[in-house]
Image (cartoon, rainbow, N blue to C red; front, side, top):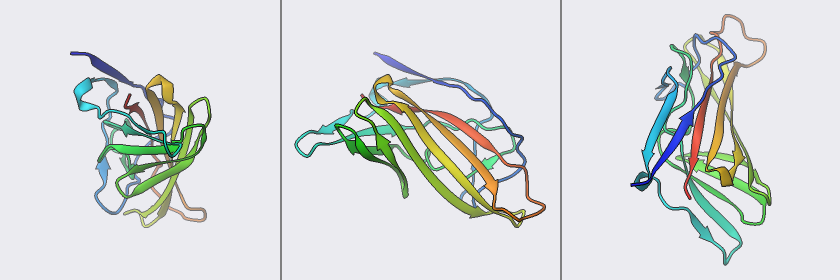
Length: 170
């Protein structure tokens, strides 16, 4: 059986000590490595050419963050569905109730963003910026998570960042 190997690489640029959403916080894995996914686990790509709209499935198996970080990531609970204009244009990726918005270029370059907010136990309000970037044709996109307390707050926990690989169904 053919296997798809998804490498998870991480570059952590900030220390972590807090940050997390009020509902169902996610404790992300602190170790990197390689995740092997059976090809049968990836749903097939779907393309609807009659309307000029294309769709494919995106899957993130884990977000890598420093140990102790609890983050408000929106991509690991279920596969996502990427919808985009086949010839390039507006695009959206839906992961459960969260929708990333952006574009897919005619050459297949994906740029998607999502911003969320949450109140944390440090009594600060936090804003996240989550992005998915890369070339659809490569089969793997990059996910990045960044958070920061809203301006003017004091005594907030240290911010966390996270990274992951996003598998694109073929």
